[in-house]
Image (tube, rainbow, N blue to C red; front, side, top):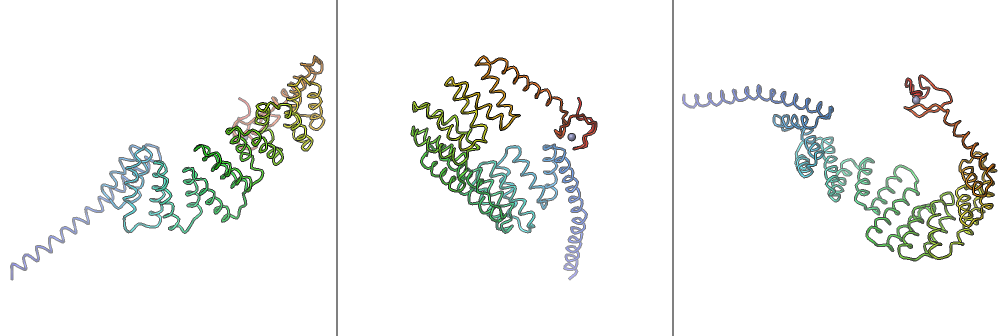
Length: 379
Ligand SMILES: [Zn+2]
């Protein structure tokens, strides 16, 4: 009987001592861990990644429940190029019980980064799926998923994701959606699938009929297959659909017609284009270039004068005129216009510019009226 009493008392005392020991010991460890963890955060802020890493390691040695410390250890490993180790740390966290929703989301976000850096896009998308579930399709997750799809060169899926996102935001942006189809086309070109690429470019035009790259790349694709007439047809459609960007097609048009031995055609194409769009200066000067090549300098000069009638300050018209007058021996006229150009440039040189916000004024400020910085106008 007494033995049982002694053993029982012994056990009770032992348990008591253990509890006391734990009570004393655990808070101390927790306290050490908290100090290390705080130190680590400060080193992170200061940009000292190695010290931060060491302190985080110390912190989790004393307190394995510090999820954020593990999270940051993984992030630092990723930043240092140890992708697989980062993934291992972050994945290890996901199987823990008792994670708060916030912690779970942060862990999954880090995992997506790991997989993206490691170019394991399928895995990254899988994690995005989990994030979508947890957050019930929050917009930032959809944007994240879109980034991953774009990185993976998966332009058709990215198109769908962007379309859905735009719909939710109540935004109509067909020009943007069309560019996704253009990217899909470019991805096919990389795989030398010209026909599939052209289908994508046509889809882009269907979505937005002023999608400039779609026309230009369509023509480039035909050029690569030596189908010059088809290439020219696309460029002609482009000039009609987006005349204000016509200059993007000029080199292509000229090269194609040169190749076809039909360079004379360029002049009539530009003339018709200018008739339809008399306000677009680029077209006028492209035509002037053609006249110059043919030695028809007076026609080129007339075009520049016409431009100056519409737009008396046109610097580019004056520059062309100086060149043409000098070539026709009209030196006085050339000098007069050159001087007026020179005058303009002197005047604009007199402006004072704030070196912080680029605000300009004809007098210097000692405190900028726009950005409130001191002494930023005069060096
Ligand atoms: Zn300023």
